[in-house]
Image 1: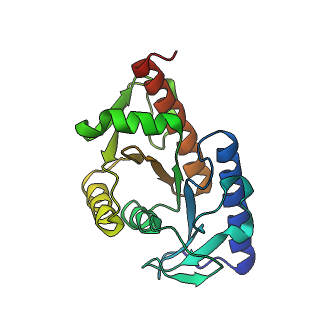
Image 2: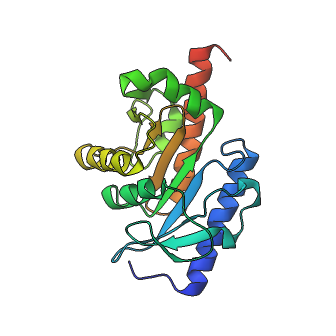
Length: 211
């Protein structure tokens, strides 16, 4: 992937900002929660990612930083979240072109409920076909759940290892924390967030009795 020209980076940042504001309005990333990224180039790896600590209702194109393969800032103001290492891990291991992280009530509750099982399986719903490569509602989607850990480098290694060993994963949860999903580009990643948020809310309402 060639490096995006300056105009392309600005357009990408504007698109990410719009996604972030939308997710805030839908209750999927309130306050300063959540972070969003897109790959600017592969070799060497460069990522455009949300600057840390920003109100997601007020994201703008200037709210994003360019970081290198080690999470160091190349350009932009502010600092990236420590979770930037998870975005880099997914970009490498899954070949993702964009990575989106949300903190909705339902993905948080479901992640807590199933953390001891190591993941949650969802099947039988037509919405599953919104996940890339899924052709039937009979598909069984396994969503791994990692224990939330302040040792982000170690967590990033575990994510990389899992994605390297198990093909076909579209996203994962951090226990009591939130959802990570991705796509080959921003439109696909955005679609995956919508599909997962629907499925996790549905699963949560069934389990917790809120119908």
